[in-house]
Image (cartoon, rainbow over all chains, first blue to last red):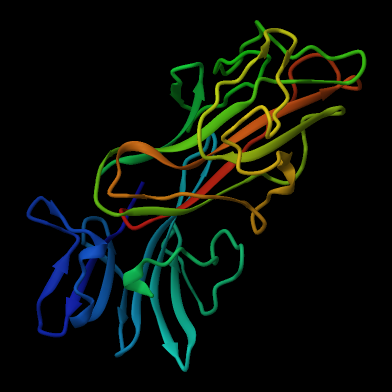
Amino acid sequence: MNSIQWTAHYNDGTELRQYENDEKRAYENIDRAKLASFSVFRDNYERKLLTIHLEPGQRLVYRQRVLQKLGDDPIELYLVGWQQTIAGACTQSIAYIFPDDRIEIAGAWRDGHAIFGKPELLEIEK
Amino acid sequence: MGSVQIRRKTGSGPTATDITSINTRMNAEDTHSTAGTSNPIRVPTTGTNYSYWATAQLYYTGTDTGTINNLEWFTDGANGLGTGVTLVVSPANSYVEATGTPGTTGTQLLLAAHAGLTGTPTNAFAYVTGAALALGGSVTDPSSQDVGSAVVLQVEVASAAAAGATPQETMTFRYDSTIS
């Protein structure tokens, strides 16, 4: 499987890489108070796929979404985007990265959809 | 970084078998096999016979930081098991060993027979992508452990069924992870 690596870029010029110096950092440990953008890569950071630039109030959402059919290889998608609350209503823009690196972008979550369905948001994403 | 498996649980232990990359046969015995023929479900002359119920659950192997949640399960929506053969499913939040009469029938999967079920077993082929069976539960910072609720499946065989192995059916688990 060709998984993804991420880097969080902060507004003070520093960054947090998911993998660095044989250490792995957790998505949950990204400092969202100073998060400016978020990039994802393949091939051990050699190939950048996408960067999301966040405006104030936009909350990063990132997931690996896996469909595992019995007897088959898993299909891995990655969701990268943001959610924002405006006047009490949540809006979002999410890029869906497919195994062949095709990227599709969608707004509102689609109820029950295996790919475009809503993730269970973490407290840090709400 | 670890990985997620689909495991089938059998026996009193229970014994957990990684079936992610293979098939598993549902017979009138509480055993995983890919092609076992020792204890088939007997086609009844009247009424219904059952497989022993089969318990399948996601399992995280390894240790990591992050969350796995938003579990669901679905089929292709078409019962390809043949005339007189159906499949029912329900989520379960605990394991209960399957029972029955080997080589004849399993105990019918009912709420009264399986204390872990979270709903009445229903037609498995009604659960398809876009209308999947939601599985409760999640795991944070997993360390070689089960993930979320299990699915419990049972084949139902009516007198109209033909003898012999049915065509194979498949199932899909979907989950989200921040571990990647």
